[in-house]
Amino acid sequence: MQMDDHEQQAILASVLKTAVDAIVIIDQRGIVQSVNPATERMFGFGASELIGQNVKILMPSPYHEQHDGYLDWYEETSEKKIIGIGREVIGKRKDGSTFPLHLAVSEVESGSRKLYTGILRDISDLKAVEQELKRLNATLDQRVHQQAEQLHQAETQLIEKEKFATLGRISGGIAHEIRNPLNAIKTSAYYLLNARSPSPAKHEEHLQRIDRQVTVIDSAVTALSDLARLPEPNATAVSIPDIVEAILRDKQLPRSIEVRKDFPTDLPGAWVDEKQLPIVLKNLIRNARDAMPDGGVLELAAQVDDQQVQVLVTDTGVGMTAEVVERLCEPFFSTKARGMGLGMAITMAILQKNHGTMQVDSTVGQGTRFTLSLPIGGDDR
Ligand code: ADP
Ligand code: MG
Image 1 (tube, rainbow, N blue to C red):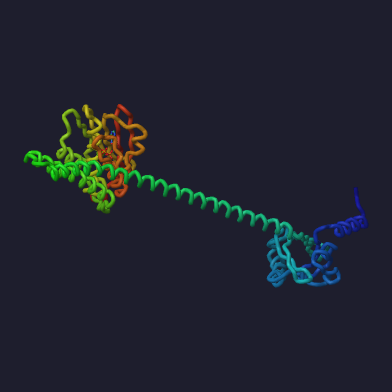
Image 2: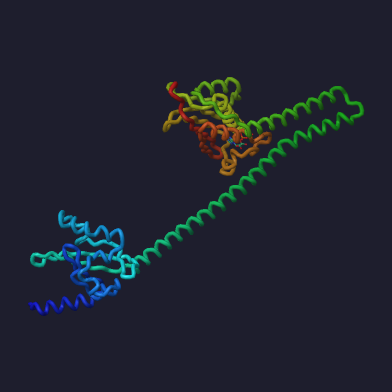
């Protein structure tokens, strides 16, 4: 269907009149040629106040000052900053108030004259929604933050409670550890004070007993203060096989226990305190011995794994239940009739200070393996 010029004019006029968007036509210099009714509504200017004016009258600073520059720029470079692209800008009403706009511009060649058509949409509502969304997002963020904070507090409280429970158990352990020898001492002292004419042998026996029990208390207190005031480690490259040899020489194991050693000749030194690491290995070996009252095999091995020296202490002893493994390193936890229950607590404290870790694998009735991972020695190894 063909339309004549008259029809086209009529349609154009109707489009311009009914459009919700403001439509502003300017020439190359920015002079307004025509505006539609929506422009008048949007900006508060009458059409006659706009036509013949520079379009920058509709723009606040700094766009106001820059607009001529844009037009010149486009004229000279044909670089499209806005034409066919569209962008968000700020409009200025007659009363000076400003509002956000989306602006799309197209270029019209009309004979020798070049015109630009700008279509402007008020996006105040959109912006308001955007702002609200941002606000909600921030509120949400804050809520999440608050929740996390509360969770953290609950966690801290729980840890405090846990610490308190552990402290209780430790105090109980100390009391228990010290009360028995104290009772024995009291009994002997009572005898010595009150016995009518004790034989020299009896006298001697009770004094001996007091002396022994004082030693028991002393070693408990010493172990405990060692644990509490473990000196800062002084790390050097330490040879694991040498330490193991020294311990085995020092502490004779019963004949019923067969000792197997497996150390590679090129094993690097472990970067740990040379006084503290032997305490760890001594404790592990002693526990392995205690776990094999009827004999068995004690295997001592080492290897390099993942940039660390791994030390493996394996026994074929009684093994541990999950509950025992759980409480293994708790001070004063012991399943032994005469056990003080500080060995593993000290072991763990030393490992932590020396940047080592310990893994336990145990099966009741089959045996236990402790795997220590220690840092590797420095440059001088
Ligand atoms: P203690 O040797 O004085 O009992 P430890 O702290 O050395 O205290 O060990 C705590 C407990 O862990 C032991 O009483 C024992 O039940 C368990 N345990 C440690 N090592 C072994 C092991 N090699 N085999 C079986 N149980 C073990
Ligand atoms: Mg022990």
